[in-house]
Amino acid sequence: MTTHRLPHVRDPEDCATMAEVRAGVDALDRHLVSLLARRQAYMEAAARIKEAPEDVRVPWRIEEVVTNVLREARKSGLSPRIAEPVWRELIERSIAHEAEAFAGRSAVETIKE
Ligand SMILES: O=C(O)C(=O)C[C@]1(C(=O)O)C=C[C@@H](O)C=C1
Image (cartoon, rainbow, N blue to C red):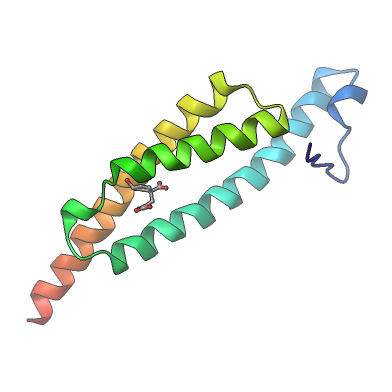
């Protein structure tokens, strides 16, 4: 199991107060936000690379991503009841972001023509 020890905050098993718990959560959330921003950048790359708006949603890939995440969740001790709905929502939001980026790209291409 991968552990993510953070400097300046207590490990969960050593927390004795809610202030310590919340400091740990806030520190981890900063990491999660930065990782999710990086994931979003890959959606922007996908919008640049894909050829048509109907290529944005890829059902087989959605299932592959969820299967991969559930395998990792099992290894890391993350509940599948958290992992699966969070990733399905993340993918839906990613599809919306990618579709918007694709539409923006098409608008720019139309202006250039
Ligand atoms: O793999 C892709 O084609 C992506 O655009 C990425 C992604 C994802 O969020 O991982 C988003 C949209 C697709 O429906 C499938 C997966």
